[in-house]
Length: 72
Image (cartoon, rainbow, N blue to C red; front, side, top):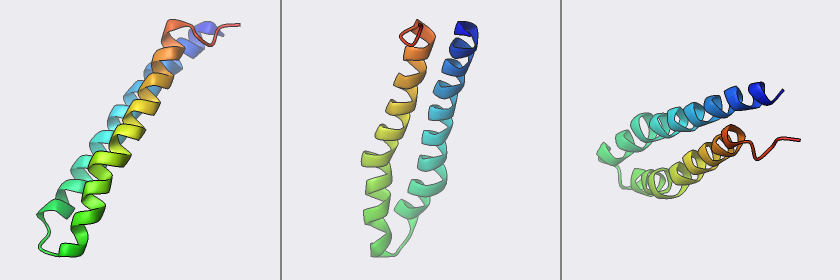
């Protein structure tokens, strides 16, 4: 069971990085490049609020699983 937790820890870290990449590349950058002024606020929120929370949370959860914090 601990081996599965460690493998899933790696998966959580990869998922966190992939989610951050998607959020920045596919959501935030097009809104920054848009000419509309109402797109600037969501782009700032995606970049400076949501991306660090998502990437940090999933990566820390994965790191704890890899290092054995959740062992019985």
